Image 1 (cartoon, rainbow, N blue to C red):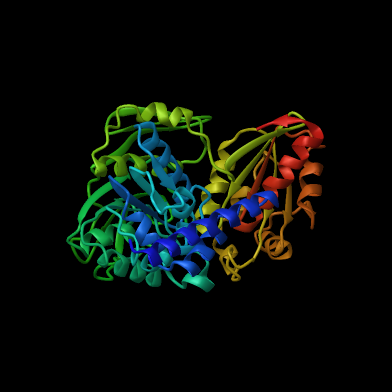
Image 2: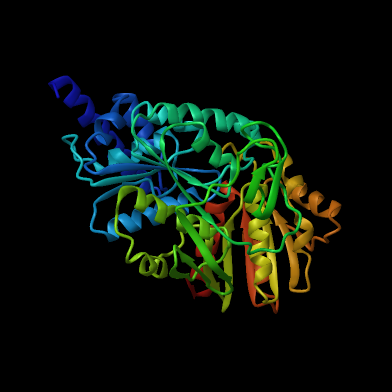
Length: 452
């Protein structure tokens, strides 16, 4: 590294550290701005730092569950005695990736890492892969999300296809139950490892599906069973495209207060809600397998894993559990509602919808969510809040689901539920509402006392 390049790298890392420090003083997280400033000084910083990772880089993509999967994978790699770089806060565009590497580096431009576990936004893969070459790429699922930014799924598929083409030596870890993911294995000669849930688990009710037509020939697809949205056991009626048998498969699934299942015959149990989280767990197991890492202690990892912010995050306020969960598109919201309904306790539900830039300005997706299902005997009150509080209230009106309160204040909404005789409160939010809601919950925790 010549003196001029060394100086650029030094200044970039220093600027990133100072930006992160100042953000922390202001009480912020600053997961992207340090990287944005660093890249202004040294545009190829990601390449210079990521090339030093000793054993391998894994990239985690997918519409839902990226952060949970990526952070659990990081914990698994660290549990195996490795030093890992990870963008744990979920800043998954180019600036966020640069932040993760810059803050892990010494001022001399050296990093000490065995692995890098990096969550990457699907639309940003091409920009990131220009500088970082992962050896393992996980694609967990593809759903419609932020239509004003991504457009329809075909655009996302095209972007990922181009990104995969930029990688010479990579193992694709794909969800066998999602035909939109499986197609990448059919369209490339890259090494492929599939994971999936190999049994019918959920009631076969109608759901929004993206996989009605074969991604290879366009013919109609037939489902032997499905889990949710387009995920399930499918086969094309017009060609030989069908669900591949996964090398990493979950069976013996039991849903309750805890989730129990087996991975390739090995029993697992997690104190974590949501059927969809099984996919996150087996995706991690598959990624570890792709790297050749021993998974003998994987069940212990699942028992000790703590969910990230907004992923069924629970804080007890005035003796009542208040559970925060991120749901940012139709598939995610339908699964969040199903998870709420599996809880037999009497409950209050708050739903907050924002339309900030990182949420997507287009909220037409609200009409693709099966909100009708939320009206059950265990629902006590339903509150709508957030920037688009009237849009979500209107959506419930057309579902014939009565809304008890429309509130402009999340704090007031939560405090009102603490006065009811219910046993639990669920708060379902999209992306930008998640952090502000957690701040309110922590503020109320100080006011009333409680525990996380």
